[in-house]
Length: 107
Image 1 (cartoon, helix red, strand yellow):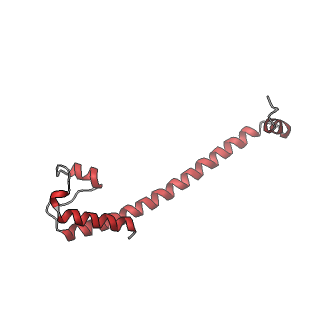
Image 2 (cartoon, rainbow, N blue to C red):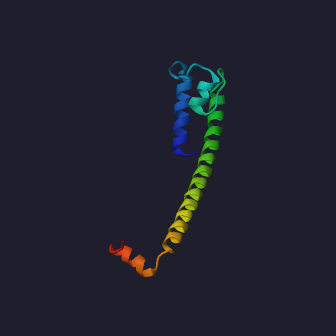
Image 3 (cartoon, rainbow, N blue to C red):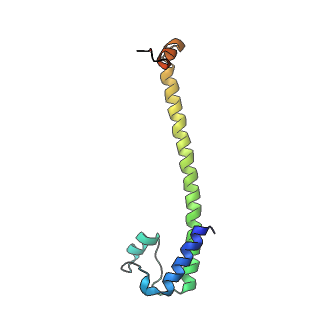
């Protein structure tokens, strides 16, 4: 588990042992989902929360890794499409015209 996950769990354990300081919102599922991405048992033990949070963190980290990989692949796809578009645009001009544009003397 990464350091951020450990800190999250330690903070959660601390807050759960001091339930009056931990805010589950108004206690309804929608509020908990907004806060945590899921809902928890209102009467779960500390062990329940540690196990559930650990499992969620592991799952979320995997999702983040997959999402970052997908984002990277799609950005690369966009760059390739833009490269193709630029090459098609430039193919309309002769090398002399392109050189003139590069030198700032093109119209």
